[in-house]
Structures are given as structure tokens and as C-alpha cells.
Amino acid sequence: MEKFDIIPLSEWGLGNKDLPLGIAGPCSAETEEQVMETARRLVHKNIHVYRAGVWKPRTRPGSFEGVGEEALKWLQRVRQETGLKTGTEVANAEHVRLALKYDVDVLWIGARTTASPFTMQELAEVLRDTDKVVLVKNPMNPDLDLWQGALERLNVCGVRKLGAIHRGFSSYAKTKYRNVPQWEIPIELRRRHPELPIICDPSHISGCRELVMPVSQMALNLHFDGLMIETHCNPDAAWSDASQQLLPERTKTMTEELYLRSGSASGEDAVRLSALRQQIDEIDAQLISMMATRMKVAREIGRVKRDSNMPILQSSRWEDVLGRSVAEGVKQGMSGEFVRRVFEAVHQESIEQQNAVMSEKQ
Image (cartoon, rainbow, N blue to C red; front, side, top):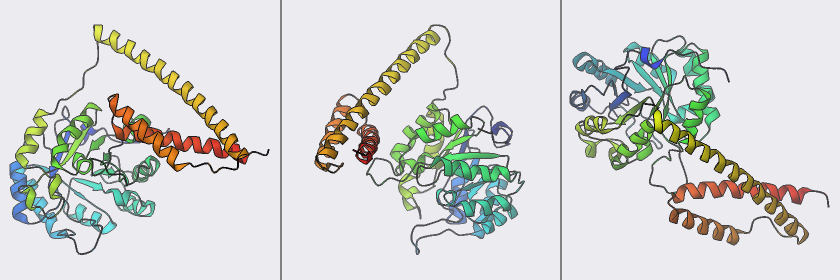
């Protein structure tokens, strides 16, 4: 797969190249006083960019949708008085023009915008050959190709300070997260494009401040390149996303408490790691073999159903299998959410296998 033509994160000029990129600030720029107070209390060696939403894409009209251009002047003042770089979300060409006019350092593209190829192409054209940093959040739904395509449109138009933001994915299922992380998707993006910086937005994944720390640590354990943390001088009074924003002091201490993992195994640890990985490879091979055997049984079930003129889906049977499997998985130390996802995928493949059998000519 062709690599992105990008400038390495260490050459973006945003902060200490030996530390993860730290982006923090309020969900929304509400008032000049709120923006400045939050910024002053955020100044710290681990915070490099001050973020604030100037235009807010809200689900329903009537909600606070941002101050607009006036707030860009406040961001200019933040940079002048604190030395922090600044960043905001852009969703259309006019947003980009104004952000460039006020010399905002980092522009990010939100999840809703990423999902629209037409809008992404419009943004790519207006950002053509910019030297600003442009970050692209994953789309609302877990569509890696859509995310990659949005990044490609920008890169084709000469955006070279380019990165991705993982903010989790919408789900109908009730989980402890506001947006389910589905770490396997940014991991696959990293596999396809190891040259691409990936930032984690633990605030939007979490939806509540109690989860921001563990999600942030998970991102660093996966060697993400930075964090974007929503921070407000008075979170409980925030005009948007109050429950997921941290106090500036907590954001600063959290960045100090997070454990950075950048070393490599050596000596006895390297030998042990190699042996454990070999075990994983052997277990994976067994899993594939067992799954193939399971699908052979599923096809036999399909033949019985075909011969008995039965429908493929037996809802009560499926609910029993799923409930039993989730319960056993939890007992064995796995998360119920993980077991559910695995068995839903297995069930879908079983349905496809049975349908193929039922479609055969007898």
C-alpha cells in the first residue's frame, strides 16, 4: 500500500519531540474569560496545543453551536499570552479560510465531516499545500476505508503535516463508553500506514471524566503519538460536553501520571517475549482450525434446515448461545462486550455458510 507523503511529527514544531503530543482545552470556546482562564491554568511542559471548538456541529438545532469568528481572536490572544499553539475544528471551506486568516496552528476535521467525501474534497482543495497541521478524526461508524480516504484526499492536495485522531465509534449497544474504542481499527490504520501519526481523543471515547485516564493509558500502551483532552476551567458549568471535561490541574497531573512505553525487550525478557509470541501463533492456528470445523458443522445444519424446510435464523437458539457464551467468557476473565462481538461475527458467518448451502441445487 502506498505510503503517505508526510512530514514526521517531530518536525511539526508543536512541542517536545521526545514526548507524546499534548493537546488540551475546552470543548467549546464560550467566553473570552473562560478561554483565557483555562489556557493560563493549562500551561505545562506536557501541553503543546490549546484546543477550543469555535464552530460546534450539534445534532439538533437550538443547542449552543459555537461563538464563531470572534472566538478565533481569543485563540490569538492565548498564543500571544501563553505561548501555546492553538487548534480548532473546521467543517467547511469558510471555517478553513477564517482559521487560516487568524493563523490557527492546528486544524482538525470532525467525525461527521470525515464521513462525507464531497465535503472532504472541498476541504482538501481549500487546504491545498498548506503548512498547517491537519488532523482527521475517524468517522462516526467503524469504516476504516472512509477514514483512510479522507486522509488521502488531503495528502493528494499537498497537506504534509497530516495525522489522524481516534475518537471512538458510535454504537447502538449500551456500553460504558460514549463512543466504543474498537482499538483494532486504529491499530489496522497504523499497520497500513506506520508513517502516519495517530492521536487519541480519550474524552470523546469516554464520555465521562472517570474513564479519561485509563483510556489515555491504553492509547499510550498502544504507542499512540499523543492525546487530545477536553479541559475546562469550570467543567460542570460547560456549555457542551460537561461530563467529559477535566479541570486544567487534573489534566496536567494526569499527563505526569501516565506511563510512557517506548523501550524494547532485551536479554531474558526478549527470549521470554519470543516464546510467548510463539505460543500466541500456535493458539491462533488452533483457533482458525476450530473455526473452520465449526463452519463445517454450520453447513451441515444448513442442509438439515433445507431438507426440513426450516428458516436459517432460530432466534431463541441464538439468544441462548450468545447469553451462555458471554457469561462463560466473563467467568474466564474476558469482557462481555468482547465475547459478544466475537460471537456476533461467528454467527453472521454461520448464517452466510448456511445460506450458501440452502442456495445449492438439490
